Structures are given as C-alpha cells and as structure tokens.
Amino acid sequence: MINFIQQEIENDLKEGKYKNGILTRFPPEPNGYLHIGHAKSVCLNFGLAIYNQGLCNLRFDDTNPTKEDVEYVDSIQEDIKWLGFDWGDRKFFASDYFGKFYDYAVELIKRGLAYVDDLSAEEIKAYRGTLTEPGKESPCRNRTIEENLDLFARMKAGEFADGEKVLRAKIDMSSPNINMRDPVIYRITRTTHHHTGDDWLIYPMYDFAHPLEDAIEGISHSVCTLEFEDHRPFYDWLLDSLGFDVNNRPRQIEFARLDLTNTITSKRKLRQLVEEKHVRGWDDPRMPTLSGMRRRGFTPAAIRDFCERIGVAKSNSLVDVAMLEHCVREDLNSNADRVMAVLNPLKVVLTNVEENKTEYLVAQNHPARSATRYVPFTREIYIERDDFMEDAPKKFFRLKPGGEVRLMYAYIIKCEEVIKDAEGNITELHCTIDPTSKSGGATAGRKIKGTIHWVSAQHALKAEVRLYDYLLTTDEKGNLPEDFIGALNPQSLIVIENALIEPTVRWMAAGTHFQFLRLGYFVIDPDTTPEKLVFNRVVSLKDTWQKVKD
Image (cartoon, rainbow, N blue to C red; front, side, top):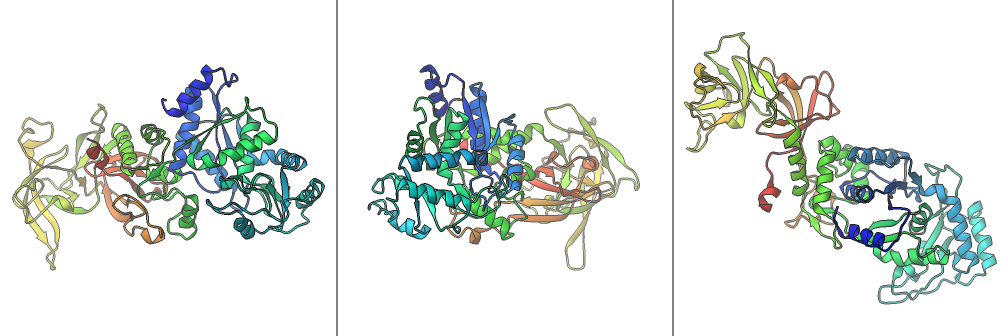
C-alpha cells in the first residue's frame, strides 16, 4: 500500500512517534446504508492498519438521534464484514462517551471558552457573517461563567424546549475560517436515541464529538475526506483548550472522497430515493449502496480491487463508473462458471433428430478449469431471437435462411424453413443438424463462422431475469443535474419474465454467479424460491473502460 498517507505514517514512525503502534478508525454516522464512497474509506482505514500491523476501530458517530437507527448500525457492520474486514472487539459508539463530552463542555465553560446562547438557528446563521464579512457577536456571548454553568445544567435537565438554547464555543467571530466563528457544540433535542434511549436531552454536535472520540480512543491517524480540512483548526483548538498533549494526539490527514459518474453518493439523496419509493429499498441493485451492489452481484474482491486501483489523492476528481464495472468483470471472468441461457427465445425444431430422444453433451464449466457438465440436447431447442435474421446482410454470421451455424458444444445446424403466424411474425424455425459435426467429433472441425448458444426446450428452466442499467442519466461529462429525481432513468430496470436457462443452475443458492455465455455475468437473486428462479445481470460482457484505457 503506497500512497501519500502511508508515506506520512512511515515518516511519523521514523521520527519515533506513535510508539504504541498505528491505530486508525472507520467512523460512520448510522443515518443510512454505506455506499461505494464509504467503501474507499473502509478499505483505506482498515488497509492502513493491516499494512502497518496496527488496528482499526469501528466507531459509530451517533450524535444525531433524529436521523439514526439500529437498522443502519446493523447494516454497516454487515457491509464491513462482507468487504472482508474485522474490527475484533473494538466497536465503539460516540454515545459511549456522552458523559465525558458533557464534562468536557462544562470544562470549556469554566475556562470561559463556551457560552449558552438564546439565538435561534436562523439568527445564528445570520450573525455568522460571510466569507468576506466578519460575524457579529451574540448578545449572550458575555454571560458569566456561573450563569452559563447554570443554564447548561438546566438544558441537560430538560427545562428548555428543543432549539430554545444551544451551547457555543467562544472563539473568534471575525476569524476568516467560518468554522471558528463560535460554532454550536450542544443542542437540545427530545429524541429517543437508538443506543442510550432517553438518558439524554442534549446532544453534542458532530464537530465537537469527533476529535474528542479520536483522542479518547488513542487514534494515531485520523483519516478524513477533504471537506474536513477547514474543520481541523476547530479540532485543534478544542483539544488545545482541554489540555490534550499536543505530542500524543491523533494526526488528521485529509484525502479526496470518491465521486463516480452516473452515481449519487449523498446519503440524504439516497434516503430520498428510498423514502419516495423510486427504488425498492436500500438494497435495490441500482443503488450505489454496498448492500445494493452485493444484491446486484458485485463482489467484495472487485470492490477492494477498485479502491486499490483508484488510489488515494489530495484533490477531488470524477472516476468513471466503467472502471468499477471492469474490476467486477475481471473478478467474475476468473471465478464464474459458464452456462447457457436464452433471454428472448425463438423455437427451433431439428427435423432430423428423433422425437423424445435426449442426448447429453459435454460442456466446459470454465475455460481455465477442467471441470465439465452435461447439457441435454433434444429435437426442440430455443435460441436467441437476435441470432436469426431473415433478411441478413452479407456479414451476418449467425443463423439465416439456408445458412449454417454451430450450436455450442453440439452440432452444426442449417435453417431449412421459417414458420410464421397470420400476422407474419416468426414463430419457429425448422432446421437440420449435420450429425457428423458433433462438437469434439471426427468431423467437428468443419469451418463455420458463427457459433450460438441454445437450451433444450424440454429441459430448460424458466426464470425471471432483471437487467439493470444506471439509475440516473447524466450529461456528457458524467455530472448529475440539480434535479436528480428528474434524471431518473426509466430504463434502469427491464424485467424479462420468461427467460430459459439450462438445468444446471436448478439447486444453486442465492448469490451464485454465472456467465451466461455471450450475454454477460448474472447472479441468483434472493427473491428466488423453489418455484421461481430470479437472476440479476451484474455486468455485461462489454468492457468500455478497458477499451478506452488501451
């Protein structure tokens, strides 16, 4: 693992810092499911710890009970384990430290560095000033220490309504960094907390709790995304004000977050998609959540590979989602068994094959492995409708009237007759096989340019196949419009009700991957029952990113 953060860690170790070892943390807020952007942070924080023979804490920054839920706590743990990482016995919650946070806030008040304010949220925002104009001090800023201690205790006791009072740090209303203009560090909210119940009526703000959590846990390197760079002066001020040893505190290092084309990485917007039922839920395979990607059929190995390939940068950039799909495709190409499936069936009657006869042909499970399977071959089969063209151009090397094509693992067939209904629609083809052309036989080497897949009409399993595309449409640069709901792709899910698949897949479990030959990579969906097979398309065979790269 070579990146600028690892280089900084190595420099720190050379200088004799952090003699107790490297301790990182992954600190999610349990207000939604993890998405692909979080995966980068998970891989980075756990990866740095593993590479440096250190440890990584899992810590839930649960300081806002109005948006948090135990459902999210559980899903986050499941996703991290699915990615392949383990926090051991080092699972913490910000709420574990609520008592300490309160004591730290009281200490700030005693030192004249915090005060209770009566201004409303709108007034505080108006008093804050702008990037070019200094802020204005609150009329409550010069309350006495005794008055502030009394008011803060009464806030804790529930004597005031939600939003009636807040506790603010007393720093500098003229600071060029707006984050230093007396930020709010505590607010009142009568909301039951998923971890502490109704023990507290006041809750610390994220920026107040976050650096204290790192310091309490003894984190050596606090790895954050770039938007927290402007918050670092407040974090330093807070730890300085409370007397934390400057030589033995977390070192914050910022890196660029992950932004993908055609992808939302805002939990607020993802929550909107779920709550307004634009998707089936957080695990909808079109969602960029890890649970959605898992259901779609993306593999943890592919996501880890993707996070490693994109690296760690100091400036934000937009990554092509095709690169993620390339990593998935590479992993599945190596590991997914091959089967034959027909998504848009066209019936073919092989007129010179005996009725009621089944021949079992040997098919290869994977080109890199020796394992094989038997596939049934009968008089009636189905092929892809797109593999036949009645008025075919010269370079159409699939089936056409009077033309020949090879069936995978089977025989060369010739189209003798096209059967149509009263409206002129093609309903079936009558073909003949060359019995001497059996795959692997003595005359199997007869040169035929086209090879197509097929399934036995008698033995094929019916399945529902879900074809997923990008949930959102973007501009030419991959950017989303402000009205992202208006950018929802109406073709993001196409359901094929009566696909046909060879019987090999009958008893496979949900989550099993296959390459449907010539069609793409697919996975068995959890909706599958003994009575109904359901497959999701993971990715197509086409790799646009690799072609661009080459």
